[in-house]
Length: 314
Image 1: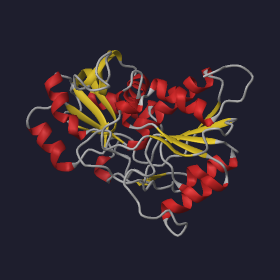
Image 2: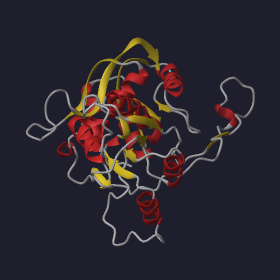
Image 3: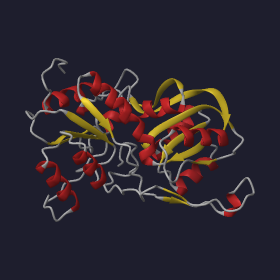
Image 4: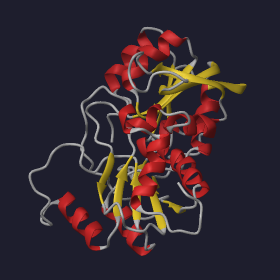
């Protein structure tokens, strides 16, 4: 993209995004790219978000942006109507009336280097990164270290309990925080991570021989069976918290191209209260008070894609 005084257009921003995150890298089921907006329209200011929900749309309107760049698709599955009487239709009408373009970079940003899981790994301080699940040879994304998730080494080993506390400290704060499964005293030297729902890569984490695996949306039975078969310890953070770090990298890239860029810190994780049982209070000071979001928090409602895929999230 040109860095001259000329104001970039939607087409200019799209070209820059697709230079870093080519749509051909996305999964076949995914829906990435320009969702709405005139390619020739000027872009003075951009807002980067994880989810396109009423709260982030309101943030975009208040900030007078010309374009939203989202990670999760608003229209992952086909719809027969975008009437304003529908949830997604109302959002689309708001954006069109305000001349706000919408662009999505989803699984193509997941596999990129640097991509979503690189940003997550960096937050945790991991070094010597490599893909957890390399892109399939022969596919457009193959090569140059691209693929789903990342494996890295902690600069200093930690116990699983220490790592859980570390993750809760360095990741964006949510009411739920981070939970761990496995021996709290297990020493963790190597860690696999995957932004978003990553339980489809439990077997890959085991095959890689890592000590622990951090991702989001882990389910009861797959997690239990994984641990019962001597898989790595597990850390489960919220979906939003594992993907929000990438927005900073995205914003840095756009700013370097001459685009004024804002990043949304609105917590779109749907869980708004966490209350630990009294027995879970390790200090012995009685029940842990409920933790809540300051405003109750918005609830993302983007469609769920086919189950069992890491990028298959929102």
